[in-house]
Length: 363
Image (cartoon, rainbow, N blue to C red; front, side, top):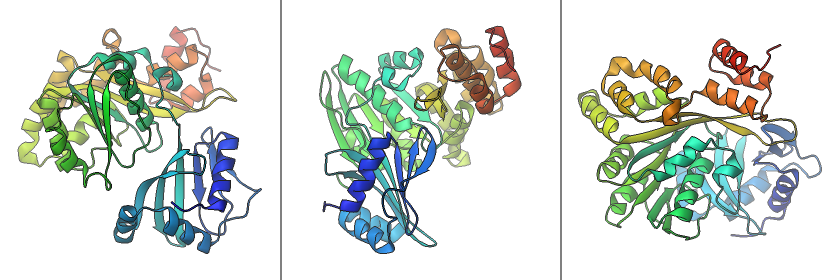
């Protein structure tokens, strides 16, 4: 890729500020996101339309450019002049071209790096089935998946295949043997790559995102045939995640989909990033479902999906927790304030009762 002095200056500033994202559009100062909040870069000139067009033409790979021309948006990876990696989204909007750069750490994160609950670390011991990490865009799903892959890589001799769009964290072989494939460069689609991966003797398959029925079916088939499949969905909680997977299927296939999902689903991690104590980065609050007999029954019976909230609330023995329980734990650990917890609660009244039981005063 060609060197872009202005872009490199923006990215250097992003790193100096300790930011996570860089946002660019024409004739407006660049913005960086620091601990969840946007801040202007006032020390550098705002990019012109010509600057952004030149960036697009010089840093965008040909396959991404083809997608951009067809769809008006595309994702790709960028490596800056210092070898630092970024996930990039380029898109068209009413006044021109926009860019969003997400900084990617040079090494895959660990559970400790991300401050994830210990029950997520236990998921590394699952040998087969489907583990889903869900949440809105920017909630750290890719980082959590990378931490799971990293833990397996460190501890177990497995063949791991990752299918990503684009590749974010680069994993280096440790105990495991890892092949990372990028959609649009190494293979055409998630679904086609998934089907091909079953002939590549994998133990673990990471699917960057389950976007359509074809990919969902291929992922479920891989899990049914004895593999551990890791993937993401843009859903906000465990109950919505179950419903979303079933809704991918046409009505006449949904009963069978429920049977298959009840058999293969191992766990769901739904996460949100919330503001940490002043001076700290954002912290993940995780709702965790671990499949047991009650969960299987709730998946099989459509009218019982709403029971999942109760099952998760009462499932601490299995490593389960609700968002509100996770927020209460973060308060107890001194990672967030009571005010932040209540502002992000699914049910502030319920969270208030939990905090009261834990002897945290609510003003």
